[in-house]
Image 1 (cartoon, helix red, strand yellow):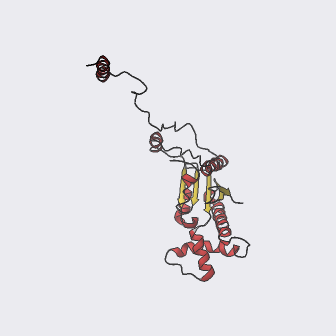
Image 2: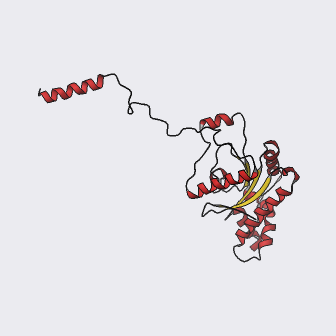
Image 3: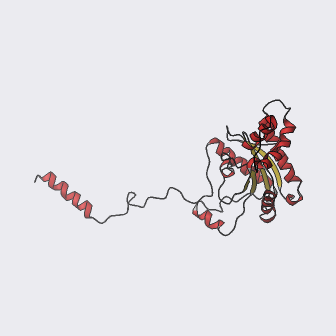
Length: 232
């Protein structure tokens, strides 16, 4: 056997039978996600701070820089014992407007209550009261959005008498007053209705003494830009 081939086989055999040593290649591959300290970013405790946190998270989401916080195992362990969400979000069931994604928040951050067209009923009001009175949440945000299907159904009914079947009647009955108030305004009737109805829901919650300890705000989500804008 030529000497160079003999040397190669000897070196290969030695490498395969040698006791492995610790090296960067031999070390276990680190997990790609490390849970951050769940206490390193405490929740805001005021309505102003809560609103600022929501808007900052929405900016990250709209810009494509979401952090997806509070999703790890250590966070789950903390939340198994207790929860301290910092905001109640009353929003629509639309699959394009999930509050945790829109505001770039994670487990335990938000108490979300969603109905079509963010329509109020006693179950919704009771759920808000649980968040405000029992969990001491300082902020309630009512979140409407453009191209809302419940609003579109309401406008179709008012425009040409399109029948409203079954339980959908409740949605139309609740949204119709805002649609009627804005019907004569120039521009997009549907968007005017979304804004007016969202502001009305905010005002109803704000006027209820059960929620007196919380600040109540309203906002509109733009499907095209991903941005949330506060309503006057």
